[in-house]
Image 1 (cartoon, rainbow, N blue to C red):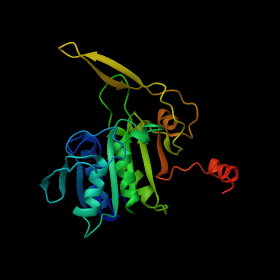
Image 2: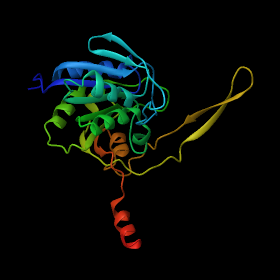
Image 3: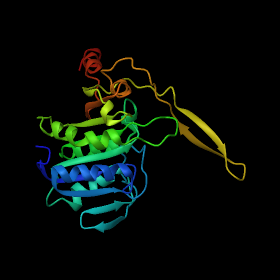
Image 4: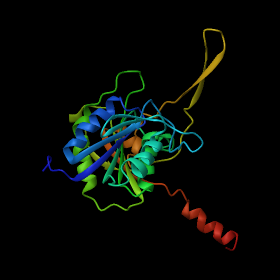
Length: 260
């Protein structure tokens, strides 16, 4: 039944920051599946920092209440701090990262702090799910209807599976109303495409240059087995991903070439 508690403790992290709207939605969902909900998230927006860890610098933590902490560090710092220190005596059963404001599909997953926090938790032995709400590219407000309505059922479905310990799930909810969803689709990450990245120079009030990175996503549906295309086609895209990046086909070829 939808109101059954599936786990004892769940840890929520993200990269948009502890006060972001997406993590508030996720907190409501988490209370429906877990007896205890802990939030350990960046104090400020940390989008695009991947799985970086503050090895060369200390970080501070602001305690908001017994189960909620704002970390002045990266999303991966949040997972590390919670799992290796804050909750070390009684580990979380599940880590949920997000819900990110904007998609994390294809090459974006390499850059994503949302995915990075989930991958860190996976590397530390905790099952994890990264969740993102796709948005439009015309500066319109994000439509959260899809993730708010479907996140609980998707999480429940994924928790019912017997998944390998070295993978986490990357979930992308399409930018549409909840009733427009065509279903779930198991997807692949897809090819790397950074051709639409541009560097935008802007003048500050004193006439000096500063720069923004900007990117546009392909909106065509070319291969709906890939998460970008599935999300563009109004499917909830679910990709199993891991931290192992070896290209095994070429690995085997190299072994022969070098006679190893």
